[in-house]
Length: 431
Image (tube, rainbow, N blue to C red; front, side, top):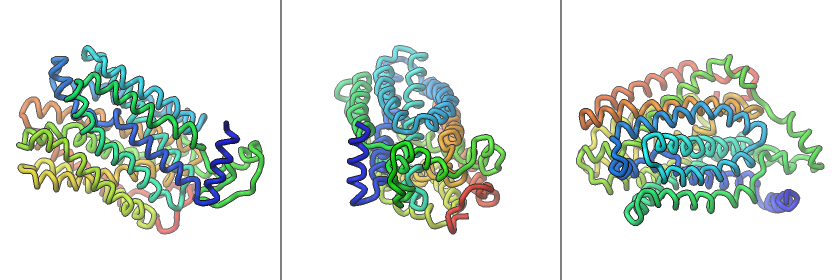
C-alpha cells in the first residue's frame, strides 16, 4: 500500500509540487474540525439549555472546564505528533472525533455535557488543527504563509457550513440526532484522503521543502537523509527565548477572544435586536470574507515583517470585539461580520505559521503543542465572564470592551519585543 501511494505521489509530482495536495488534505481536516469549534456550538446552546434545564452560564462553565482539560493534553499530543507523524495521528483523531460527536449527542446531564465538550475540543479544535498545521509546515517554508492561507479555507468553509447545517439538523431531527449526523459526516469526509494521500514530510518521497527535488534513494536512505535537513530549536531551547512566551501570550489572548465571538455571537446579537437566523447567518458572511482575505494575508506573512502582521491580527480582533457591541441593526451586523471574517483570516493563517517561523520544524509538534495549549486555555477562560455578564445583566458590552484592551496591549508588545531566536533560519525580509 505504501509503495502504491508513493508511486502515485511521484506521478503527481511530475505535474506540480505534491505539497499542494497536503494543503488540500489539511484544509479538509480543518473543515472536519467543525464539530469541535465554538461557532458550531453557538447554535446548540439554546436547545441544550432547554432540553437539559441548564443555564447559559452553566453551559459556558462546562465548556470552559472541558476546554481547559483538553488544553493540558495538547503538549502530550504534540510529542506524539513528533514521534509518529501527522498521518498516523490524524487517522486516530478522525476516528475519535466521530465517536466524540456520538457521545456528545447522548449527553444527559452537566458532567456528561462537560465530558463531551472536552472530547470535541481536544479532538477537533485541538489535535486536528494542530496536525493540519504541522503537515503544511513540514512541506513549505518560503511559501508557508500562502500555503497556510489556502489551508485555512477549510476553516472558512466549516464556519460557513456547520452553523447553518447544525440549525437545519436541529430543526429537522433535534439536537441529539444532529450530533450523530455530524459524527458520521466527519468519518466519511476526513478519513479517505488522510489514509490515501498523506506523507508526513517531503523527504519521505525524495523531495525537499517547497518542491526542490532531492536525490532519489531507498526508503531507509531517505529517512537517514531527512534528519539533517530539519532546522529548529528543541522545546527546552525554545522555553529559554522571550519569543516563545510572547507568542504563547499572543495565542492565549487571540484564541480566547475569538472564541468569545464565535461562542456568543448569536446570543449577543439577539440581545441587541438581531433575529436568530440573521445572527447565525453572519457566520457565512464572515466565512466568505475570510476566503477573500486569506490569500492576501498569506502573502503578507511571506513578504512583510512577521511582528507587524501578528500585531495587525490582534488589532483586527480588538476591532471586531468593539464592533459587535455597537451593532443595533442588520447593516451594522454585516459590517461586524466582515471585520470578524478578516480577523479569522489573520488568525487561521497565523495559527500554523508562527511556530515553524520562529522555532523551525525539527521539533515542531512539541513546541506547537505547548503553544496551542495556551490558546485553548484562553478559549476556556474568556467565555466565562462574558456568559455571566449576559445572564446577570443581559449585556456583556462592558466586559467585551475591556477585553479588547488586552489585544491592543499585546499588539504593542509584539512590535516592540518579538524577534527570531538565535539558531533559527530567518526568511529574507521577515525580521
